[in-house]
Image (cartoon, rainbow, N blue to C red; front, side, top):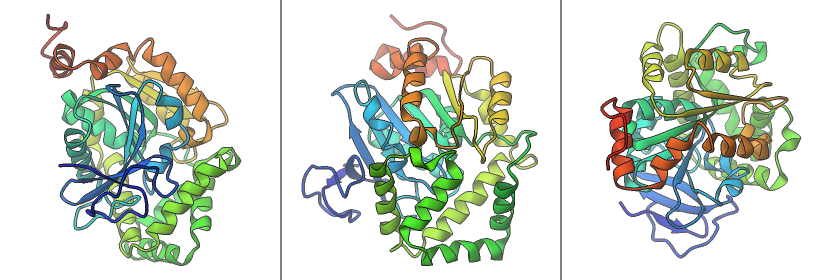
Length: 347
């Protein structure tokens, strides 16, 4: 599969007219063919650098990483795909469920950067990253989870958020609410979503905000956009639920790679108490709490996130960085270690 790059408006599958930053999305806009067109942003980085693959959350897109990516390209090649039914990647007959997008992510890793990579996932993207690390440990050197959608745990939910999710869970009402979004201007859609996800939306830079509006404007032309996001939302709830999320709980418990867990203390969607519970259950994970920050720290506090990532890579994430940095013996050793078959690097 050969990814293409475009410098103007994206047309999946069309020839690439040449390099350049496309349409004000913050990175080089490219396409890969993975059972249909998959859009991704290449934010750049040094030649031969380890790959940091960023996975957005529900109703998000690759531009969710536009604020933090420039802070990380000094040492990483930073890539960010649009999952099926999100951003500029239309579903095109593909499922937008959590498991389907995990399978798509796996094939993307194989087709574009190669393995292993460092995975950085936010919200639903954190869930998908955990599932990928559990299912294919040889592809994932380490995990940076940013306010991930973790298995439901006893916590006091935000009443407005809990009510909103309950409404969307109703078959006919959820579809009606999603359809109403089609009549809202892109600026209003972005403002509404970020006001829910951020503790202080004013912290998001105007340039990054404009990039989100641009994606929303393009998605307004997609007749299947609301249907796809609604299907993904219901899949997330089922995957993380008390009675329906046993497979996800087992997958999280089987993850052996180094994990950095970044979590905003003012997150209304996934309370910080859930992250604390996960950290207690997995003592090898490194938890960094970000005071006064909401569900998308990579947009609201990118510098604080970068500092936490840098500190982790020098400590608990050293093995992950080594595995993602060197081909050959270290990568083979890491694949075996993650499967529980080796205890030291091969000579």
